[in-house]
Amino acid sequence: MSRDVTDITETTLQSESVYEGSFLKVRRDTVRLPNGREGIREYVRHPGAVVVIAFLDDERVVMIRQYRYPVQRLIVEFPAGKLDAGESPLVCAQRELLEETGYSAHDWVQAGQMHLAVGYSDEVLHIFVARGLTAGARQLDEDEFLHVDVMRVDEILEGCRSGAITDAKSLSCALWLQNIHEGRWQV
Image (cartoon, rainbow, N blue to C red; front, top):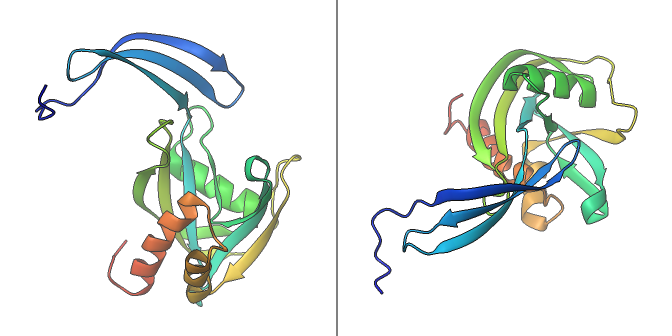
């Protein structure tokens, strides 16, 4: 059979809930494949999230270090967090930056979106750039523990190169950071 199929979309035939947690939900769908056969797709439903590239006036960037239990290590990353039900991405970005770092920003621009793990999740991550920062008190959740780091752009890029920064959203945002910082991308 030829693999040259013009329409390569898959059609849902049946969908079932496998797990419903307080945050994530797991689905198992039976789909009609482009070749007419059936297949199984298991995936995580995610409420969506934001990530913030926050520039200080001297062009240094606000980062966080947080212990991430699934990988059992401290991870250096851009401030980020999940959307609450009915919350707009901008409001979430403003809330997360303040909660995690204590900074609020005067200027906000939504730079883009990314799909974090398309092979097994429907998560959409909204990328924001924040400028005009004002320092204040952090408002961490009672079960949230993290350190705030202020880093130069070259330090972040070197961390990506050396493997000190391994978080996928942060690696992707480093592309935005580099191009914004070097004036190639306008936001």
